[in-house]
Length: 245
Image (cartoon, rainbow, N blue to C red; front, side, top):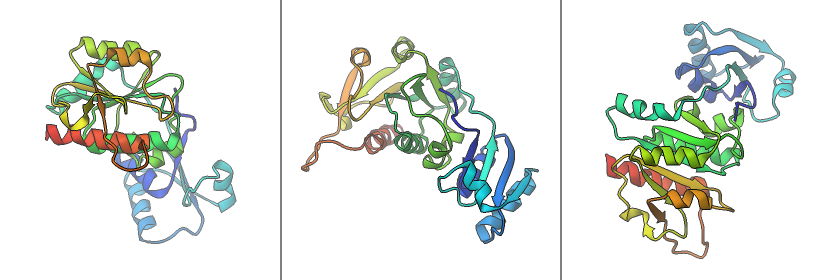
């Protein structure tokens, strides 16, 4: 899994990237851009010695047809962390490790929204498979509201072995599934924990379910039987965050 494009777009997404310390090669800006937010953006680029190149709107449109808001930044490809570094990340913050494992999340918008919630909830790393996962590109960065600049991502060739490694390290493995036996409010998230979220259509794979110490569900009380995976992830992650803080 690599960053599909070497650019991000949208004025706030680019500002988040700069503030997060991402290496920016150059920024292309639509000619005639103005306003208070753009002034703030220019000052930020100037303070970080980032080159701004002004161009006609059609030049930016040729780079991406998405809503770039007149700002596109070319960045270095995303670097991923090793699974064994997660404990060090939590230790530096003097916190108990909390990991989110995404099994079969292929929709870019869902992926970005989940990472955004994970960052807000204090997750220390997100683990994704090398194949069968949403690409990290300009759209996912924008959807995450810049959270992908801060959230460590670990890419595993086989999620089974990644989860087993965490389990062997003493992590409690929690599967978030509508078929779970326990209401998520009754699950203890306070120790080292890895939460697995599966795709909306297939759920968590049978292999990973076998590694789970506990399966948690969100009870439904309306006519619709399931939640969007990004919403479900946010609910469960903030229950974990609530217990920890």
